Length: 266
Image (cartoon, rainbow, N blue to C red; front, side, top):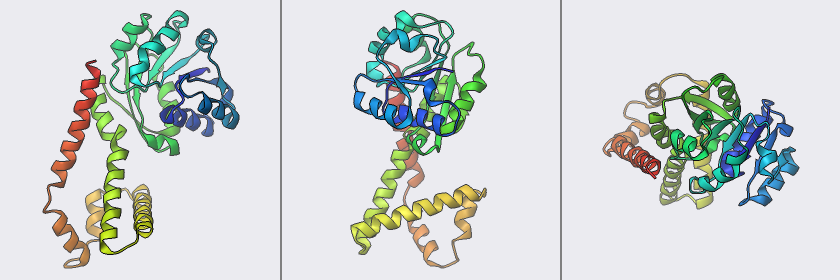
C-alpha cells in the first residue's frame, strides 16, 4: 500500500505516526511532501523512516491514497500539482476543513473517489474521534476505516453531518482546554500558585479521563455517585447549576458549526 501525504503539519503527522506505530502501515509505504514545512518533513524521515519527495509524478505514481492535508486556502495549488499525475485507482482523503467532496472532485477533474475525514489533535496520542464522509461509489470503505482506527474512534456520517463533527470533535479539544484553563485560573484565585493550580488541574483531568475510560456508566451516574447530600460537592454544583452552562456550550458549538458551513461556501 502506498499512502501519500500532501502536508506535514500536526494533523498529517498525527495520522501517519499513528498508522506506523500501530503497525497498520509500514513507514516505507508512507510518502510525505510539504513545501511549507520542509524541515519537519525531513525530521519525520529521520525519526520514522518515511519517504520525502517533491517529485509530483513520483508521489502520485501507483498511490493507493493521497491525503490532502494542506491548509484549505492552499488546496488549489496542491490540486495543480496532483492533477496531471493522478491515477484512476487513487482514492483521495481530505483533512481540509470546509472543502466539500464535490469541490475536490471538480478541482481535480478526474472523478476519483473521495473521503472527507475530520480527526482532532488527540490523534497525536491515538485518541482522536474521527468523522468520515464518503463520496458515492467509494469502494472498500472498511479499509480506510481500519486505517483511521489506528489513531482513534470512527464515526461515519453523511457529508451534511461533517459541519457538526467539525464543531463537536474537531474543535472540541480547544473548547475543553479553555475550560481547564479557566479552572486553573480559579484555583489561583483560591490561593494556589500558578504552578500548583496548573498541576492540580492536569492531574484532575487525567484522573477523571482515566475513570471515564474504565467505567461505562453515564456522566450523570458518575456525578451523582460522588455527590453527597448537603456536602461540599453538592454546594458547588448548586452554584454551577445557576449558570446556563448547557446553553453556553450549545452556542459555542453552534458558532463553530456555522463557521464550518461558511468555509464550505467559498
